Length: 83
Figure (tube, helix red, strand yellow):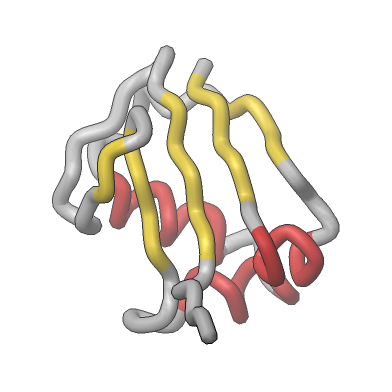
């Protein structure tokens, strides 16, 4: 099982801070995003856009092509701006 974390406004939009998912049949971060978008509603809105969502695998920034596996920690968060 992989631990999936959702941060900042994404957590609020999805009303979910974290979950554990079996990703044995999901090979890449992009495929996981597609799977999450297929939940519909807020999930589709959050994960269907090709821009505006950052991701990490095991605390390393990652692209949609990054391989994922059970036991990974995968995090999603919106871009952060500062002032």
